[in-house]
Length: 174
Image (cartoon, rainbow, N blue to C red; front, side, top):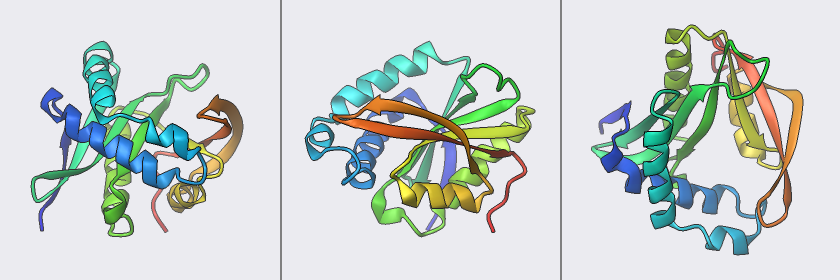
């Protein structure tokens, strides 16, 4: 089996959208209402990705994770979008099909993300995560990320709490 992380191309938009939508529907079940998750559209998300590729070309970096040439995950990285975090990178999105969880691919994706941030000269990384998403929080904590006190409420069919985790770029999995 051949695993590869590479920069995404516009031709990857549909496959990336499939990862994003299907992963939301599995990872957020029980956190976000089923009615909200059922309305997510791969076609709509692919169109939005194509717009984002163009609009954020200079500030965001899109990657896909492939297994034997098939896209199984994706990542969106950026300079942190928040005031006061000029020396931080942000993992805006990192998703992997559920059938590939607990196989080490997510760890590889996070290590790749931190490597990108190191090459960009950042000292810190931030990640916003649904507070109720205990599985993701445990994953980030393995890399040394901790809840830093920042919280926002978003409407995802109901109000949900999204919390910010931050950590040193030098974080390593335990």
